[in-house]
Image (tube, rainbow, N blue to C red):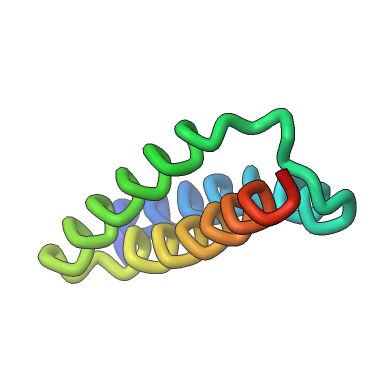
Length: 84
């Protein structure tokens, strides 16, 4: 593993880890009232572009990060839309 890959995976862990508490809170309370629906939609859109970029470059760190983040943000968005 190169130093660049190590940094990529460490960044991935930090990015994914930052959304886990929000996902847990959203699922427990069934509420995402304090989160902007537009922020979630824009974040998810950017996430899909990053995933496309990563697929073109074959960068596993970025692919894994964006799949995980995309799923978490999608779940939060669905909870927000369903229970708002």
